[in-house]
Length: 240
Image (cartoon, rainbow, N blue to C red; front, side, top):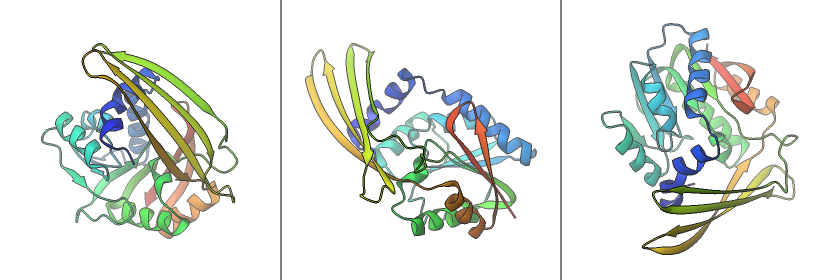
């Protein structure tokens, strides 16, 4: 989960690394519209800083967000005044209302700790959908597509501050059913000097069959969709 330090850098770093929030939101909205043309409400689960949600707000009359990280949620609230945003855990949240669409993007579903928690999360997603409602999930990597040993490095600048980010990926367990991404940040500011911090992100690796089982158990018709805006594609469910 993102802490105070990395939450502040989230949008800057991912935008500089080429993440196309607008293009991704448009692609996801199209997936929803193809299956439910009259969709008027959308829930963004694990909405982060609200970068995608801000784009969804331009496409759906009513949007809301749920996020587990308080620092990320604070940034989303500043970005989206007037949009209902709730602190909650994707595995067991209950807003007491339903939506025409729900999304969970950027591999966030991988943060569940087990297959049982994957099932719990999908049940939480499904109970927030109207009949015929559409769920779009951008999954994390699968066991056969994850690349242990992958490294990345970026340096970005904004308002005189330079940020360096390096990461290394490995298996988090001997069984190879989870990934570990270790990320280090160095931030240099003209007035405040240099600071360094690190984070570990552990995500579960599920194959398509396990996702399909979780979708089906939650009462969602399942399909996998390839997309030019996501190397991992999208998982789409429609509430029966």
